[in-house]
Image (cartoon, rainbow, N blue to C red; front, side, top):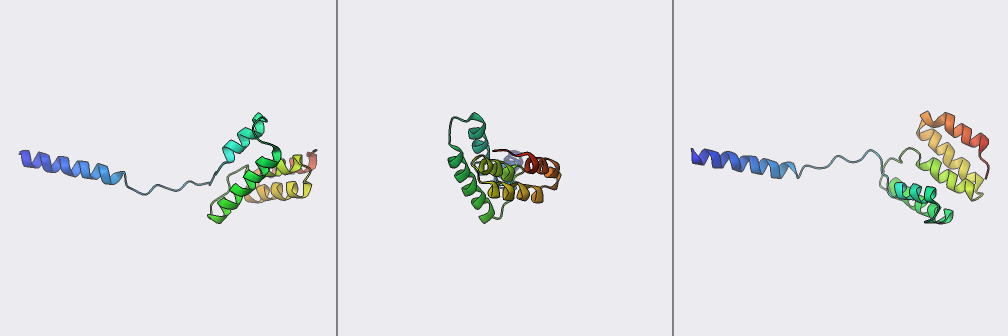
Length: 118
């Protein structure tokens, strides 16, 4: 009887240990530093717009290089950073990229394209 309990305990312990080694499901989106970049933008006291733009560009390049999905709002945020620096061509390009990737954002992206003022 003792051998059966030890065997059952060993099997359960081994199952629990191996269950923790299961591969993790990959995230749907690759966020990189997006959250901290948006935080910097809204706080306005951490990084300049230029520094935020460079970080966002670098993260976007990493996401694309890894074959990951760009999260919703990423291109729009990058576009707004460009727009506030007077780079309107890049603003339009990023907002259109957001609209193409996330068609449900079309109404708001069209609003931004019509009404954005530096």
